[in-house]
Length: 440
Image 1: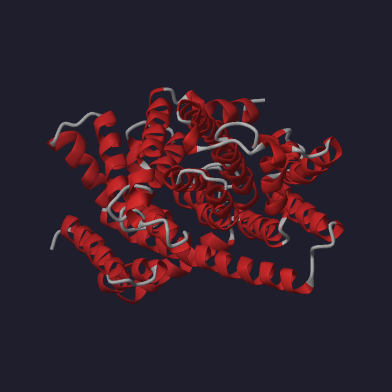
Image 2 (image 1 turned 180 degrees about the vertical axis):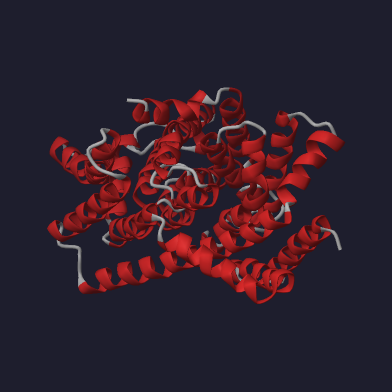
């Protein structure tokens, strides 16, 4: 059997195991281990050992538990609730103001946690009931929450970009900085759409009634100070890093300790909250480490078979496709896979193929990391089997049907596709900030 057929069989076996509901790391790692032992005999056992050593020696991986812990501290201590109260008071008088405030909440939650699922959970439990109670259109608000949660793996500190950095051997700091401008650009585009749509049709997002706007100036500024706390924590973490005063790992430790101190000062760090944060941090960190380990093992076997070179020759020599056509086909494959896989699974499945191919075609791996994150989030929101669609259905109240959820995402997906096209046409949108910071 040729090496190309073995590589194809490995890929097909992995996809089959994933479709049967196996855990991501088990499916990928199991196929990699079986292929290594079959091809190389007992010497194949060195592949997972080598991958484990590589993983343990990767110093930036320490940022992973730090940022996950920071996110859970801020979430479990209800600081996210303070954020929404601030947006409620300050943005409520504007048509669609609470929906705009929800996007702002999602951006800050993303900066606290780095996981899109966390943004979805907070939006569905805190913002959604308030928006529905205020008479907002149910299709509008479900789309707002899904779109806002999509920023979770783009705005730093993105946990998924840490995973991409490990697999692609790209610098985490540059990837995070590359996600800042695109993430804020997408948030601004969402806000502009909501504002224009609600100005044209105020029934979609009515302003708060006058009696609820009657809040004293002192109370407004108290809520503002309370809501700004996550921004202070984010600044305490990112400013030293951007200015070169601290390393990435040191900045992550500053963020975790600042969040922990803030929760203590606000008298919200109970033993129960602390235990929940530690347990969840351990669980998610271990899950990501197992996935990275499986992906590195799978990639090692794939590299040994020469599968990447074979695919590159197929696209460039036999089919005669241009680099941009190949890139667009890769993005379309993410959209297809995103209908039944999450972003982590998609990355570890295709990274052994796509990352070397992107590099061989002459594209920047940091820029491609941003394209990957946006494309996977578009896939999450695309019917019929988008991951976010069913997550939203599980968290939404009974009056919001799956039909409503499907109907809510079209305009926001269109905005995300426009943002993706802009970043593809103008790569400096993503690359300007990392080049500025690291070029000094």
